[in-house]
Image (cartoon, rainbow, N blue to C red; front, side):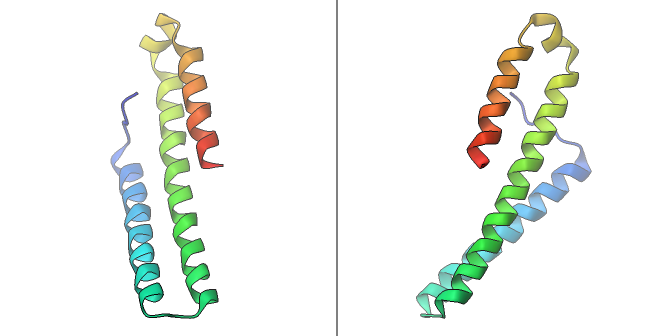
Length: 93
């Protein structure tokens, strides 16, 4: 399954991933500096949410793309693709 996203969707996902990357770098630095556990966990939770949102956006885009792809509908692969997308979606839960 190819990841095909509109430019605005791609920008949003990439921004979320960059935000998560920065937050994870911050968590690493906080741990190395011996910062307060509550602060570390708060930052880690924020990074996790950013990754979740990016993952959901990617899966939603894939779902939309696959369900509107006329070649897939004609070839009978729609159920197989639905199962693959469901598995991906559940991996984020």
